[in-house]
Amino acid sequence: MSHYQIAVIPGDGTGPEVVREGLRVLEAAAGRAGFTYDLTEYDFGGERYLRTGETLPDSAVSELRDFDAIFLGAIGHPEVAPGILEQGILLKARFDLDLYINLRPVKLYPGVETPIKDKGPQDIDFVVVRENTEGLYASTGGFLRKGTPDEIAVQESVNTRKGAERCLRYAFDYAKRPDRRGELTLVGKTNVLTYAWNLWWRAFNEVGEADYPQVKREYAHVDAVCMWFVKNPEWFDVIVTDNMFGDIITDLAAMIQGGLGIAAGGNINPDPGGTAMFEPMGGSAPKYAGQNKINPLAAISSMQMMLDHLGEKDAARWVEAGVMHSTERLPSLAAGRMGMSTSEVGDMVVTHVKEGTVTEESGW
Image (cartoon, rainbow, N blue to C red; front, side):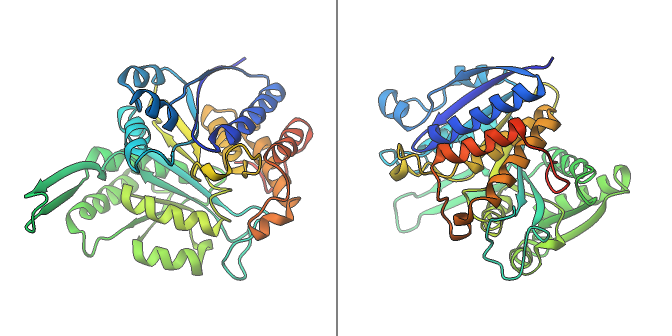
């Protein structure tokens, strides 16, 4: 019987509410699959920062390294200036734990409305693999003559062969999964950003030719991809890109899959001994906190991703089937609402995880 150590960071606003539903689904999946787990909760977020001035101390990073996975609710507090929590908690965790893969499945579920005319679940089902610890987010740069009319700000994009190649290899491996089509698209800007993207382009083709000849390779400029996501999302299977472009296109991707209320993601160190952090893509939505009305499906889907990462494939399929079962029975989702409370949606998924079946359309 497998046993897992899982850290839980409920976070701010509605984070604790959606985490609660994700953990209920975890309990149901574990009961059916037969694995066990221990939970350790941390109170990192806006309230702790306001109380102590701490974001994510180094001692906590050392503790988080020992967990099999981390389940995060949301970070963001109206009384804390923008950037403090994001950099002090989210980016610090990504960099210090070397969570160098950001994984974003983009899948339109039955019953969820996309703003793209004449497109349905059969058209929107791809995955974005984003490099997560380099690029413009490495915070390399500085100011010259700050605060004067001659001020200069320099922000450098840091791209290493090691960083690009390990991200590419993860993406190639993902494209080989039985639930993918075996196609990998590199998204960049080779015609203008000639240094960084020359490195990515060479690594993409060298790695692909040497070790992944069975994976079909494609390339697209990032601006063209923004158009094609809207016009022909069915063209894409697995996408790999750098930190900044990945950040931008996954927000667009979230909207075509029905919005942030259904979008989940993972920050992963796939190396032996590495951990991973899974979270809904939506924010903390503090104005809805405590009202039991926020959509928990993105958090439940991030729990599904965590189960898949841990190797609990059956449990992951059951959870996705439960999410699909729910979206098909929540017609208000087509209008951007739920029509049920947070806990009622959680009840629906939990019941299906315990008792439901997995269809051919569901599962990873």
